[in-house]
Image (cartoon, rainbow, N blue to C red):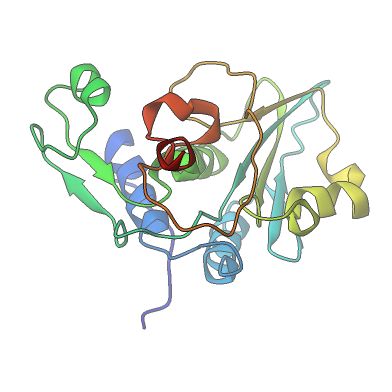
Amino acid sequence: MNELTIGFSASATKQEQLNELMEQIMGAYSVSDDEGPLTDAVEVFLKKQPHLTVRRHGDTLVASTDFGRERRVILAGHLDTVPVIDNFPPKWLQPGDSLIREDVAVGHEHERVIWGRGATDMKGSDAVMLYLAATLTDAKYDLTYVFYDHEEVAAEKNGLRKVVESHPDWITGDFAIIGEPTGCGIEGGCNGTMRFDVITHGVAAHSARAWMGKNAIHAAA
């Protein structure tokens, strides 16, 4: 297996650079408990940026600027995904592909779409954060980038929670953004989850957008 490398070509366009980052992190299998290799690669990438101070706690990375600004913005995203269901490895879908969701096709009629586990939740935002971490070298605010593990499992495993408890000074700021989902809108958060040892069938959807899937529990009832 080739060692995962994260980076982008300096001569590429901004969109091409974002696509490179997205392809790399999408191609890294990072189901909860298996984030380590992706975290390692992200750490190497962040440490190449001379304007960032990079700290690590477990498989959570915190990278901060020190521009001397009065305020600090935190950008946070998780690197793990829920288990794959025939959607890994990822692939690019060409315009017109039936796998492209209807609303996405309407909004991006002539564009290809990357498809696979974690594309929205939340490697799309992770790619943007990595791009900003490398290119935003003189921002109006100081910035802290948090890439954390174990979002999709029990709360006691959550890497962000562990950093808050062990190193609260690492993530002190005035405003925070968690870039999930990736539609550039503000949502109030998830509706909550329940866990059952029941095998049934439906169409997966994020708990914050349950109407986009088919609730297998409701269907079973």
